[in-house]
Image (cartoon, rainbow, N blue to C red):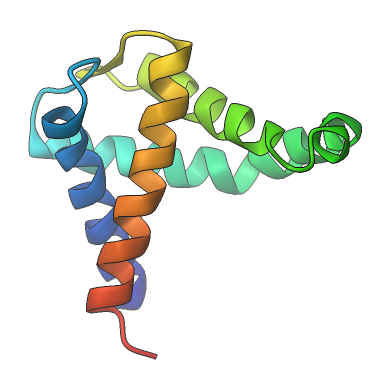
Length: 113
């Protein structure tokens, strides 16, 4: 049940991005559901490998390179899911940041420990 709630929260966070950014487009709520699922899978499977491979750069930039990795993951998902478009890499970095903030805020409100 908790996993479904987190998936729904992430979907709502992703679905609100087009209202905040003109460079992110999502066709429908079902597209946002699929994109949130793919984003979770990509972040679970590929992101740890990228973090390990880019560890020297991440340490050198004091962790700021993680924003680039998150943006890259966001951009990859926009290429994989039809109906979810991100205009460019800079938009992907900002979109990933806003997605994280919105998802964190909604999780803080709706998920009680």
